[in-house]
Image (cartoon, rainbow, N blue to C red; front, side, top):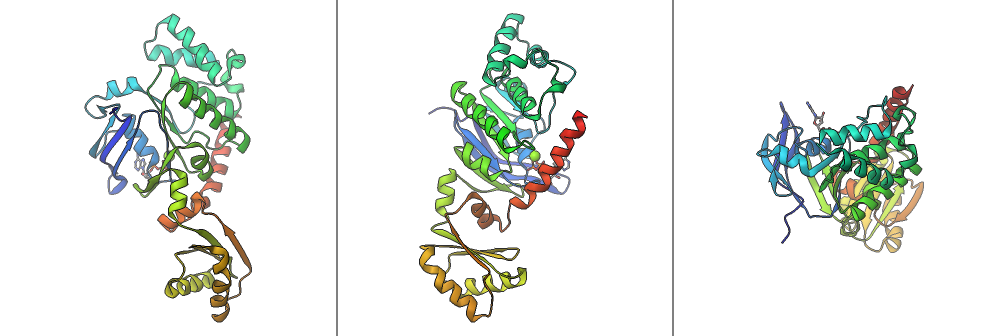
Length: 333
Ligand SMILES: Nc1ncnc2c1ncn2[C@@H]1O[C@H](COP(=O)(O)OP(=O)(O)O)[C@@H](O)[C@H]1O
Ligand SMILES: [Mg+2]
């Protein structure tokens, strides 16, 4: 049996009264591409900060490559690379200079630095931009350079905190390619955080859904979706109070599996959705509730999140992107 890349045992972190990470136990095997998916404030960054020895746990413990983060932080640091949320590059230096600086901090010899810089630049396809000042880079280029920097010292485990935050969808897709490639070609175990459903779904082999500091579900995206069972029927009503009444009705009626409502929509997870729709509509009609739209789909991670937390992760997504994009623009002005 290989040592797990990461293992935590009731790992907990509090800030005064607030429990940011609440007794998290998980095990990530060597070579995995693992995602922590959760909304803002779920505790993702705090968890990564503990695993990367930036802050100590309040309770419980964690091991990275078999090394205890509290007992041996410097040994842990030699084994990991970290790409933090928000850029930490020096934009008055060139891409190459930023990487060189990092290599020096890790005590790599001049020759080794030179060789490794070329390797990581090639990996993220920035070799032709290496001599340019970072302040002229696009957001996507900066993120790629940060990922390259995190890889300079050949870490076994790479932590990526919201690697595509604020990037446009096309750039995001590119970054996913790089992340997949380095997981495969550099054989580096990756733990990333995200609040983008799609990112977790498309990129990660396994994900932990995290909310209010604890893990609500952990599996492959496929299994998480399948575990909901059946199809999701979405019924659009006239307003939220109608949706609330209707979901109570379905819950009482008992025939529908998992019922939630969000704004004016009722979402029902149910076996054989196509054949259930007439019955669902009949119940609505009997209660004098007007149905404006009907939608049937296979469960998405959004449905999984909703079913485990009673909330929709998407609400947070838009505002966050706007905020970060604004921040990036402000920085570059
Ligand atoms: N240094 C800190 N001091 C006080 N509260 C903090 C600190 N860091 C994080 N928190 C709180 O802990 C919770 C989890 O935060 P965080 O780990 O940043 O979540 P996420 O990365 O999932 O958005 C939030 O409620 C946040 O406000
Ligand atoms: Mg965070």
